[in-house]
Structures are given as structure tokens and as C-alpha cells.
Image 1 (tube, rainbow, N blue to C red):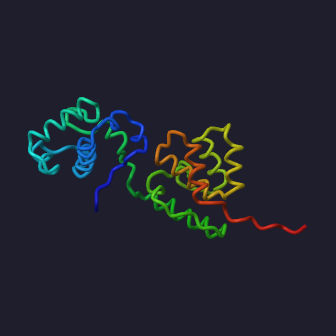
Image 2 (spheres, one colour):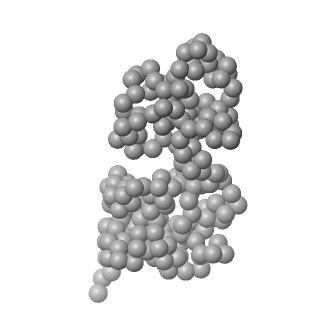
Image 3 (cartoon, rainbow, N blue to C red):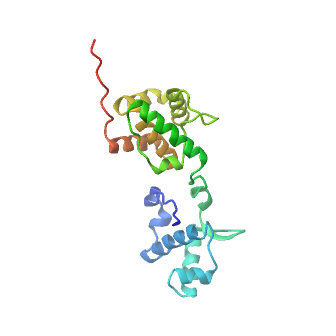
Length: 207
């Protein structure tokens, strides 16, 4: 299976990155790829040089420049990208809990007649379940989880989202915000909801 890593949008505003010249930026991105390929660690200097298609002396100078600007750090295991272990967390895997979540979502969709998006965020963060993994009261679990993430004071805003879209869509958007560790989760969630469009109109009940 191909290796992958997270690249955060905040790179756009990171002066350490944006002050790199073109060659060093390319080298830094390639080093991120190399770190992911070697499961969070960088190989020997000669292997780094070979992977970057440059001689060892030039590769050593690149590594030194990236260390001096704080994009690479050294610990007991050797060189690695700064904050790699905290940003590339191990929760990006599918587990039995994910399978239970998907089964519950499928049953809930069949009951409500709606189809929630099947996204990768389900494999990353599963906020809408209680401690033992059951969801006997999906509405309560949704509200408790949403308020725990955004704060109880945002209950009216959450209700507004649900009325404009639907609960599965809002749940998926909040899960995405958690998975991406959004700096501004409210703006992130509203962006996802705008992108997905309004929910299915609720049927009118004749009186």
C-alpha cells in the first residue's frame, strides 16, 4: 500500500517554509515523502542523497539549512521533520471500531432514508458514539458529541446547521473538522456544509 502523510494548509502562512528558495522547498517536500516512506524516520545520509538525486555533500548542506530554520530537528533516533510524530498520528488506520461505526451509519441511513457521505474521515475520527460504541439514541449521542467538541454555547448554531442541512451531514462535517484538527472548527464546518449544499427538504405535514 502506498505511504502517505498529512500536509497542513497552515504551511501557506508558515514563514519557515515560505522563506525557502525553490530548490530547498522541493527538497523539504521530498524529505517529508522520504520520512513517510520510512515510517517516520529518515534513512542514512547516503540514502537521503540518493533519494533526492544529489551528491552527499549537497544533500548534507540542504539538511543543515533545514535544521537551521527549524524544519528538521534531531532527537535520539536521528533527523526528522519538526513535530512529525504529533502531526502524523497513528489514528489514521481502520479499526474494528470504524467498522462498527459504519454499520451503525448504514442502519441509520436506511431508517432515515438518507445517505451520509462515505468519506475517509470515518477512518480517522469517530466522535459520534458513546463509550461502549453503541448508539441506541443517535440524536442524543450526536448532540452530546457535537457540544463536547464545539462547546455547549454553540448548541443554537449546531441546531441551525441541522435545520439547514441534516444531522448526518452536520455529523460528517464535524468529524472532518476533528480529523483535520481545524484551527477554526466553526469556519471549517460551515465551509464543508456550503460545499456539500443544503440538505434534502423535509416533507411538509398537512394539518
